[in-house]
Image 1: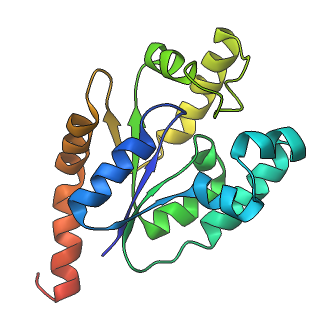
Image 2 (image 1 turned 90 degrees about the vertical axis):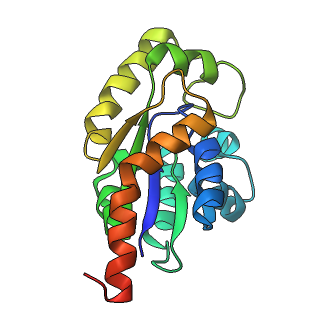
Length: 179
């Protein structure tokens, strides 16, 4: 069996969709940002503030490199995780990489709701749009892109399952020795 890895820009719903998807698939849920926070003993925003983005990205690479192949889980990554080539390679090794995509307008609305996103804090629309467009280049390297704009979490999970279901069934059949 294989992991389901969720990637995408900040505020696209990776954590919310990931938790619900994990329940539906009866798998554990891993949020790489949460793992980083546990290791660092502080929230992501504080890591950025105290140590800088480069130190955060180093922690992020270490967490991704250390992800176990078993048991299969649903893994939600941070918005910038998949931009790093080593992370991309490792996440592809671990399973199906699904990029959740939503409009920049939706991202701007959601990202403005809290202080958990250090790259959004105080950023202009132009800066976020530039970052969004820059990262989309990397996100297109995911195995599957799933548009979630205007969908509820449940609808987004349904769309993800529809897109990856055949591959998950194929992996399960292969594991059981069925062709």
